Length: 260
Image (cartoon, rainbow, N blue to C red):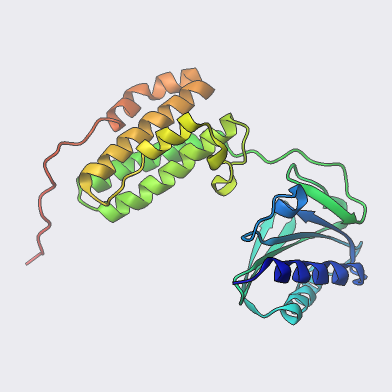
């Protein structure tokens, strides 16, 4: 496990490397460090502004070597969003290092905390918003398949689908409360009432009875969120969601028989 001192030393080395790299003309801290909210579990988030005409793939390769030269790397994964590459490093110490490589004219705050170290950012952009209609549609689809999985006795499949359904409900709750929604970052800041509702919708065991109770509770929460956001849509969905929030019969499904 890494220490906070090790994390700070690695970040300082990365910032120093950025200041001396001609392909990098700007840098900013993002994430918890930018909002003075780091703790012993925080990772490193560093946004890099590339110079005009920089060869982005070559810069990313060079910076992968830079990180490896500072601390051993176990693995990396790339995410691309809005024309920006995010290379996520897993160090052998289990520290996560996120380096984002921004084309010169895209370097800016996107609504998240952003502490400029050097460079010339563009005007800030508004924070991204989830596709709420797709969130709602995905949620009722997951509720349908969770019900059939429980009815068929496929309880682990149902558990997976209910976890995904809960994620969609959490997204709706966080957006309603103007909290970060990505990966449930705002869920712990929801009101105690909202958190209690989510708790009641979580099965304590992988059993037919508890999973079905979880499904019904989550569907009711889903309806409440839709109704607060779009009452006409909620009215159209009401008959179907009422069916989906009705408990299944208590009798267990027939045992599966092997084909002879």
